[in-house]
Amino acid sequence: MQSSEFEMFTEQQRSNWVRLRTLVMLRWFAIIGQATAIIVATRVYGLQIEAGFAALTITAAVAANLISMNVYPENKRLSETQATLWLIFDIAQLSLLLFLTGGLNNPFAMLLLAPVTIAATVLHLANTIVLGSIAIALTTLISVYNLPIVDAGGNTLALPALFQFGFWVALLIGLVFLALYARQVTTEMHAMGEALVATQLALSREQKLTDLGGVVAAAAHELGTPLATIKLVSSELLEELDDRPDLLEDAELIREQADRCSVILHSMGRAGKDDLMLRQAPFETVVREAAEPHLNRGKAVKFILVPAAGGPRLQPSILRRPEIIHGVRNLIQNAVDFARSEVTVAMAWTADTIELRISDDGRGFPQSVLGRIGDPYVRRRRFSEDGAKRPGYEGMGLGLFIAKTLLERSGAQLRFTNSRRHGHASWSGQATGGAVVDVVWSRDAVGADSDHATAPLGENQRFSVQ
Image 1 (cartoon, rainbow, N blue to C red):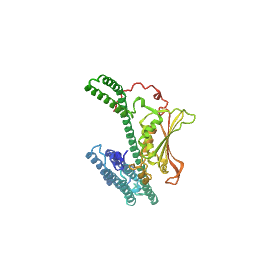
Image 2 (cartoon, helix red, strand yellow):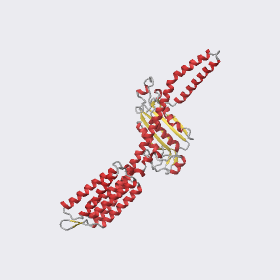
Image 3 (spheres, helix red, strand yellow):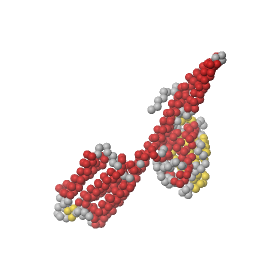
Image 4 (spheres, rainbow, N blue to C red):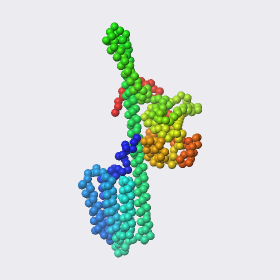
């Protein structure tokens, strides 16, 4: 899975996901709240503020909304620059309103956190920093310069200097903390969304290959009988046309072409996966099929069967599900990528479970990411070593995420560890003998004991491809 397939999900295009209508609605709520606060402050509590200039500032926000609604369509999505300018306007408008109504003595100063938090979720990092810096600068400015609030008795309402300083510090800390928190959560959500899309694409591709194999297998099966009849009849004709050399040559050609068709269909049908006969297969067969693309990559891949003591001796047959094949294939690929010379694939089973262990003799999983394996886009890797051993791979954990997701979808439980048996020292200085991945299914989850695995095959069903 190449990163170019996810270009539409990159961080630089986050703002394109935000509709103008959404921000317009948020601003309408802000306008209603600002107007209500001004009216209550002047009419109910009798506070003396610059109500005229405040009303003018609120009117500017109303005008901006009306212009946006009439110039752009409702489904307009903001570009990076447009979203940045929109939020800068909101910060400037709110800061001016706070300047006219007491600065940080106004408890509504905390609303400055909102535009910065929105920016952290939808804007590129550079623009988020710019917008956050503007918010910090304006917050500092209105903490020093502002028009006071005077009550009905002529007394100026102001916080003690120490409390006002504390409020200023709290606002700055809140701006930074909420921006970082919102950005981190949003980034992880986007990464997970992208990885899930990659997982669906991988499963869809494997399913299409499975469907195609089923069509080929069905064709090979259904055409086998008529081809055999053609060969039989052509052989009989050869015996009867010894005295007709002109027709004898044609009969020989018919038999040769029938033989050729049989060979072609046999080669095409070898990988057929949806034929009723091949819908389930021995556990080892499924694992070997998954490993096949990585058997000739310069590393030895050993397969070991280890039936549990006291358990059934007969190897179980499991359903050949695309998610199992693709998930195991990704795990074996990762092991081959990082192995020094050998990868071991051990298969075991008990009366209740089917187990697979994939281990290599490499340096093991880095301790810094061992607890996060299976998360998409894990970036803390040994880049220099990975680049040499895995040319063409970005090493961001997407393959392991896809494998883990697909295998868990099939009912498996996965565990990632490092082996100690060889005593090698990892890059972190801790002894390790390579990476180990344990995959465990219940027998029911993979159909090892289901009626599907033992029922008569019957006639092949009509197969359709979407």
